[in-house]
Length: 100
Image 1 (cartoon, rainbow, N blue to C red):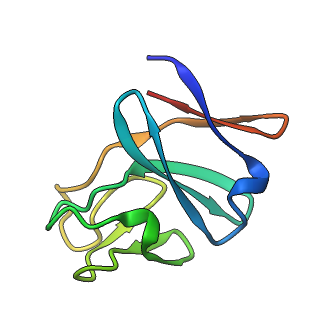
Image 2: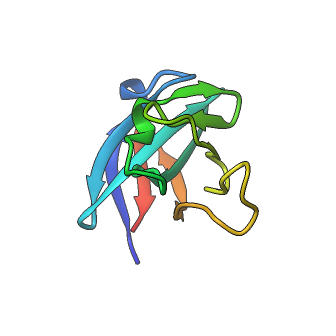
Image 3: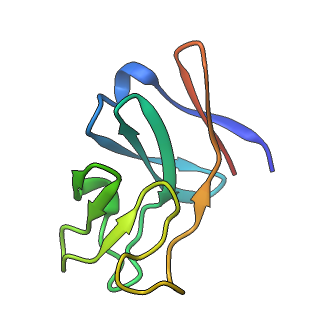
């Protein structure tokens, strides 16, 4: 595991997300009120792109079928035991780094 630069803080405005590729994975990076979070980009239901979903606080709604995930944990809102992978994020200067 190693931290990899995936974006600049200016690339992801508060309340938005960006899909990045790191470590051979598609990762959705979210900016929630200045705090960055990263989870797998693909919804467990049908592989919908979570980075393109609507963000409400710490919840993202898959644009395809409405499944919701907490971007801080990767947990599916309706299924306690299901979720997508979550990745550690750190910001150094203006660089957003994800541990993959």
